[in-house]
Length: 229
Image (cartoon, rainbow, N blue to C red; front, top):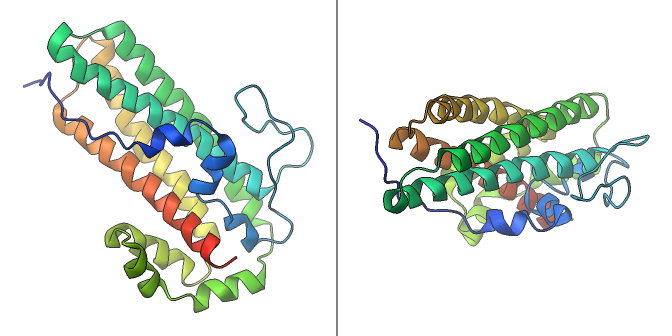
């Protein structure tokens, strides 16, 4: 049975992310570039009207973190718009044209995020670690940090799993593989919408949760790196 109603808990921070790509980097894995020598960049050059980095010559890990985060959070914003349209459909009926536009945009931006994260993985794989930063990560008191900042244990534990052993490349792979999970769910939703069917409510709950978990994972990574600066 298809449901027309979905209670939406849209994370307000996603709208903040959409404002400034450099703030996005600061919220979604930024400063992780310090784990590699000379790989942080302000992202001030090579941008377009959207503020997205467009490679002209040499791209850095820091720029790719910003690029991937920008597209990921644009996709999340598109999904929030889709969910608001589903909610509004209870009063006005489904606007399938607007729903299709929103889900198509979410898919397109997530595909771009996936491309950026693949480039990030490749670049990180052939770049040596900054051993001073890696040592700080290994010595970091993750448990105290989590308790003092009230971070969600199930998500922060995954951050700790990677960073407590200095596996920053693993964090980038986690970003990359999360795009596959989300794209699979987005494309499932698109099939329904293209057939003028509202997706099942459980599908919408699941993808909303997935977006939220990945965004918090990226934020917690950034918080750890900012704390060891």
